Length: 307
Image 1 (cartoon, rainbow, N blue to C red):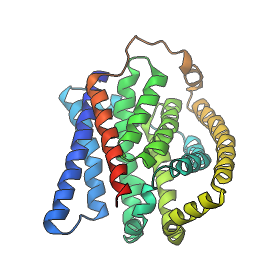
Image 2: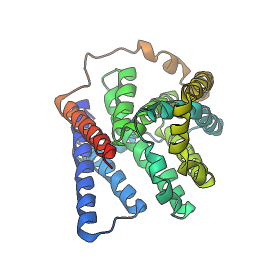
Image 3: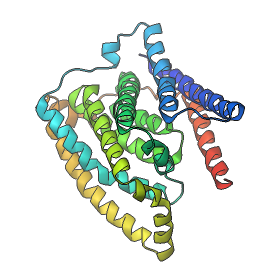
Image 4: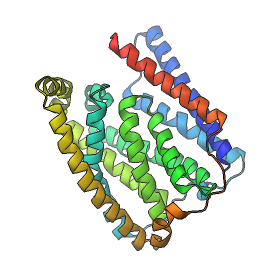
């Protein structure tokens, strides 16, 4: 897949997502009721999946090439799960910093999520969401961009787009970081299956924690306010930062070990030296998509200040 076509597909994704938001808003005003979180999430995932698959099929590319789901060894699967656990301090640190400026989106949805059957949220958040997002971002986008030879640039750009697709600053912050760490797994194994396992594991743990600590989540915002008032928030974030540095360093060692198990260590450690073909990856449709997404996110934050 040509990176220019991938960039156009991302514009279609953002426009489709905004169209869905408008339709759902109109539905609420017209009927007085809202779609369930299950229905709205499935529709949201389809808004990013359909443009990607349609672009691949229209241009005649092979799905197996752009979305490599090759098998990996059991030892790699187990280390992938360990890798995910090691990334929690990093996500916690980034989430805590972002909450100094914006609301925690997941906390705001916790009551609606925990009001649904747990098995349903496991299927939606722990399986369906990660499957779609890995197919699109670590498959379609990452593989398309890598054809330019800009491996690191491809990882960073696809991760930023992954964060932006959440359409709020809180999830953008840790989503982009998590996207980059998931991209490392794909490079270490050559398989999107690895990043899917990691993403599904991460989300499933989040679902369990959400149901197990629903009372804590309900009070999270007030706890943060109290910590800010007493000056404890910076100390807490500092502790999170230290933990993030230590555990993320260990996570890097784990992903290198995974690359060794999958016989890709030589390629993996040589990524910074990969030859580039002179492409810039950034095109006008991509810039337009990013501007639209950023404008929506800024508008959402401004609107939240008046609610």
